[in-house]
Amino acid sequence: MKRTGLWIRTGVILAITLVGIYLVFGPRRMPTAADFTWEGIKANLAENINLGLDLKGGSHLVMRVKLDDYLKTMTENNAQAAVSAIQDSTDPKFQVVNNATVAENGNYSFNVTLADGTDLSAVTEAVKKKVDLQTWNETRSGSTISWTLGAAAQNVLKVDAVSQAKKIIESRINTYGVKEPTIQNQGSPTSGQILLQMPGVDDPERVKSLIGAESNLALMKIVSAANPAPVTTYPTIDAAKASLGGTVPANRKILPYAERDEPTAAGQTPDQKAPTRYVVVEYPAVVDGSELRNAEAVSRTGAQGDYQISFQFKPSGAQKFGEWTGKNINNYMAVVLNDEVKSAAFIKSQIFDSGEISGKFTKTSAEDLALTLKSGALPAKIVYQEERTVGPSLGADSIRSGVEASLGGLALVIVFMLFYYRGSGVNAVVALVLNMLLTIAALVLIRSTLTLPGIAGLILGIGMAVDSNVLIFERIREELKAGFDIPTSIDLGFDRAFVTIIDTHITTIISSIILYMAGGAGPIRGFAVTLILGLLINLFTAVFVSRTIFNWELSLRPKMDRLSI
Image (cartoon, rainbow, N blue to C red):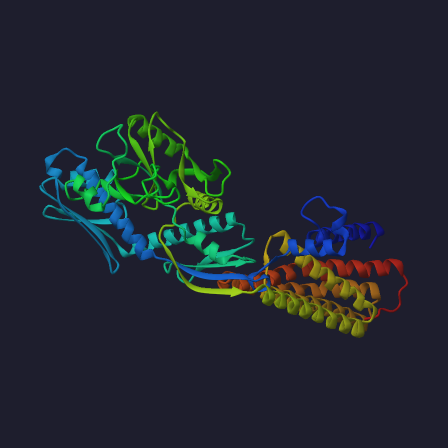
């Protein structure tokens, strides 16, 4: 090969090697003098490589979304919305005589019985304005209409609920700051199980409370005896019911209102909470948490217990809120969080895009609440089915064992190659070391997580790389025995071994891809990823790099009559 081609090949190898070294050992910012010290290099290495739960320590959780509760709540809400839609009509034929909701043992249905059953089609059309009935099977019997959720529709809704829960959990975890968490489905799509692994978490209980925190925000109109008089509150639920005639209609709710801004009563200290009272609000809500664009904790005075949550609406929510407040000036609006009235706002003018939740929040509780509001409400509560904690010391032991195994395996391979192939073994050693460096660099580049099985995949990749070099060297040896000169034997050895190398690599990569897709858990995928990367990089190191080294040797010694192989 001409020197020009050799210099080009060498330049490509050096460029890729330097990039690999920087990815593994370089900082992710502008370098400083400290980055070139031993401590700086170790710190950069630790920062660049994402370690899995088994290496770094942390928490392993398996949670389950309570899908039955989700379907039950959805059925009950649809039933209330259906009754409300019917009652909004002034037609006497639409008078509701009885309504019931059945949501147990997998049978999710609701029905409405009317005073007059002669025009049930009109009733269905009225209900469709507030309830999406596309997935519900409708049946009619006399003056009663029933809607039932079929098994296929239930499965679709369950899968959607799990997907929504996973996205919300991921959003909350990422905002909390957990680096490279593993969040994925476990079991069948309709089981509701979600696997969460959080490497390096030092406060798993706070993360658990953050994951399971409810964040059902709603803005609702307060029903007062007279406006603009103060908010009408009731000492008990029964008193609130009495104001409604003894029963709570479908378009009303009674909610507790504890944190009120009232003068301190006689004998009550300023830091004591006022007794819980109750207010009546209109249902459904004017705007709910799904319309939020942003939420953040803000401090009024800088004091620890004086934080509020400021929130802004999306354009669609701002439009609805603006239209409603424009029609309800001099009325009271309740800011409802998780079915509890947090504050009551007097509407002085039309408001479009923002609001706030006041209360005795600490900085941490306000930030956590703002975070859960931003991520949205979980479709249903979750329960924890499995919880394991891996201590940092155990992770450090795993790292030490994995590194020792990798270096030990590499050392034994180097000794064998140098002993058996002598000078040509140096060629193989350079290719092996470069293979390990570039494999780790690739892990850093794609932000993959290195696990203990991943280290096993790295070691197996070393074995496959050695196998490639052995195939090439043995093929060169056979060509030399056949009487070919050294340059021809090297060319034939690489060309004829390449087909076998490609064959073995492709079959192993296909197996690894199947393992990655069907493996499920993160550590198994970690093994597949490192093995695939190692094999792909080996095609560069064992063939391109090794051949370049041989070509340089031939270029420097054109009359070579003996090859140490």
